[in-house]
Image (tube, rainbow, N blue to C red; front, side, top):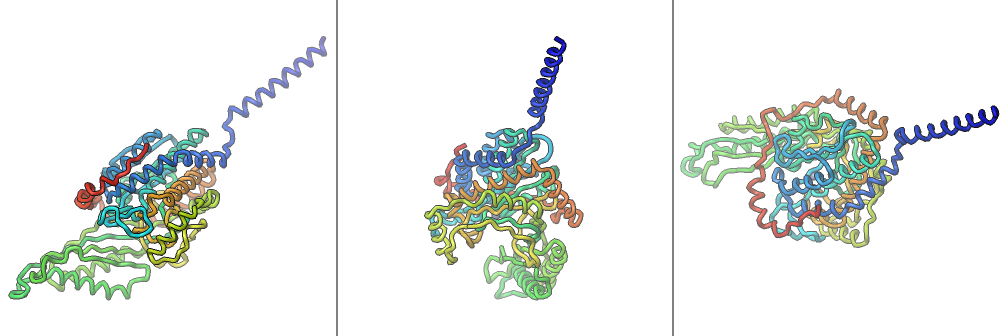
Length: 509
Ligand SMILES: [Zn+2]
């Protein structure tokens, strides 16, 4: 009896240990299978592709200019709200700017999106130049795809966070007027990105690429007004003071100055208002000018440029007013983050282009005088330039000084097709653009999964950012009293809306 009892006690003991072990192993957070989470995100994007495409196509058809993106932002808001995001519109005093949030606690992963179009680039989805509405705006920089990629990434990330019980918060930053008024300057100045751990940015492009380091220029955009005195240019020119003379002298001074500026600079300007008629001495001339350089050189280059303005005014006897419309920094892409994006680019691969898509792309290339090389065919990682020689600018630069950021260039255009062209508008509402957009969302959602599940990666990204912040602390170039110019395109857009409305496509949300 005694032996049987002992055996029974042992058996019960072993059973208890096994049951307890099983209970503990299932009640503790099971290790996340990162690849399975990424596959779930990709499957979600695939399953909802029709909805995402319909939103992008709707924004393409609205083609709204900077700060006029009322219908475009509404479509993205509706989509975000459908999937449970809390959307705050009108942030930083801009009606079409938004912050959408889902989840709680740290880390906070943010995605950016833009949705403004460009003037005069209306185009049908055909491989030759043919406007949809002659002279109307068009999505010449693919921002219809850009905004939707950001939103699709955010929604897919929310889906997998919820499904796999991963802690974290997802944000989408809707940033209007990238091409003109640059909302990000004012959103950053308001502190909207301050609590975000990492910002994942995207832009449609003619390659499948990610860059690290500083590739873009810092920028200051000026509006200069010269005021003179009008007079009869034939009978009494000596009574006049020419504002056009001031602008011309300014221009000559700038051209002499160029030789002595460092090769990283760019200065370009137009005379927006040059007088009303040649026989009247112009009493008002308006010049709009871009001055670009590296972050460390921009203040000095701007000072020298402003001296040229002053020289024009003094020599001609005019008075003058210098107004800064906007200004922002170089984009300092986080190297660790760019590498992480690149790993996911390799993993996700490229879209499978059909023969029809390749032919369409080659036709666009032929009609734009480019080599017929077809569509992007490999992932590219571009390290920081050994010598920075200057280039374009983006207001993402402003974000890069308050949060770690890197941009995925999604493969949406034929190779070598430049932005701001009819060729970009042509592919922006067809399968080429759609495939690049969906692929972009998969890569960004996968990168976000890495950041949420691998604390070491996140730490590395943040440590690199902390080092940058020490070297280049954020300080707005734009003075506090300057706000966004919300009415920049108000008249222009109201002129085109009635003509564009018959071509609107509605999102299927
Ligand atoms: Zn753009």
